[in-house]
Image (cartoon, rainbow, N blue to C red; front, side, top):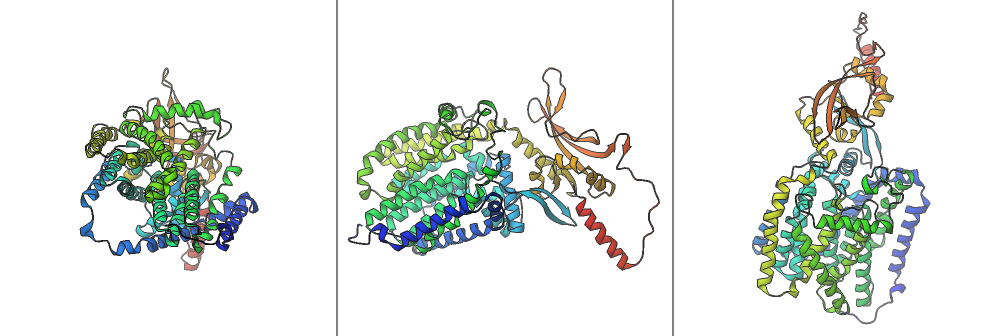
Length: 627
């Protein structure tokens, strides 16, 4: 409802305070604090920034929804819809194996959550050891990935104890939350059938199941996008400080899930300004006025891209993106659009897509754009959720455009296809929004039947077979290593592996191949003193298809001084051999550096003080000698 005369927008002191807070955040985040100082600051304070923002978000949710929750009664719940959401979530979770699917992202996030849990520090451990029963992180790096997902995971560790599998627990919970929010959005847009349709379309998307059973932040990303859209609709409806605060902090936390998620600040700002203009008054709350300062970790952490030339991963790209010199360019768009078409219209055996969602979503997008253009002039009379959906379309379009201009933006790439999830969500919202334009109940039931048929005939078989995941070797090697860990009766061993984060995050002592070579004397010390029950090394061999000769992958060779004995090996992919070997001894030429010297043992003193002094001295030396 439009209100009469009020202070002009720029005459409100709270607006100026908000702009001042934002300007201060920009200056501190991008200019005032130099690179390494910024990284150290995030490492020491990032956890606390996330905690404050999250607590304020929960408080805002309570303030805006408490009256609704007090009137809620379990007998009035739509149990049929609850069953649809529950069954759809179960379908997404039971056909895929829980595991780390995209290795660098998921293990880095797990490692960061580990340091947040143990030390309240933002650090990804790269070297750690079990010291007298206590696992200690000895070395680590600051990761480039935003902090909200590892923060939530660290809270789960705080409640249940540290377990790597907590990442799967969190994503399983987020799967049901996503489907529940999708149903809520659909029901608000077009009634019960629209909610069911949205849930069925997502349940038939194998890519969603792949991420629901993984350890990445993609599920949280689309949950926060949808939650922010719904909170935007609530702000349009309520137009009060409580709903405004919930929307503000949802946007803030969404911006700290994935790098590009700050794009959704654009539709939120448009929506807020539209409400202010319609109300002829400013709606602001004190927590949101200072919220930009809570976003400081994002720009400070972004300095990593300046300090590390490898942060954009252009050196690791292969295929038609290996020659990229800049991360974003219009020259990538045509090629990326071709790959996007290939992904969305591929057979379900080749890609974890849903042809049903692609076709219905594509048609829905056309009708949605026509619908949005038509309704722009009458937004004031539209339901709040329709207003939010139309405005948030700018965010979905901007994000898709950004990915199309990204050097590694090929949606059919095994590593990149997860980036299409926001686009899939946008298509589902488009379909649900335009559904009332086809008011015939028979037609809506037909669409429900098509979605259900797509789930049963294509989605479930594709998820059950998951042939699309077999081409990503690092994911298979991760599962293979985790099986090796599970098979060990004792976990007091050391693993030498360039992906040491996997082992350290599973509380297994580990170091990298370069570190083991550099600190060969430390490896000798641990072998001679039986510090570990065994020292193992993980290696991958490439097989020559003509000669059958095995060639070690670059970076996996310990050199001739390390004598290895094969423990386990398997061909996880054509023309590769994955192997774990035991380090039997370390030699220098023909001399074994790890063999006992054969001398007489020293006389052991019986003096307790001397024994304690010797024990402490040995322990100090032992810690220094850890590889």
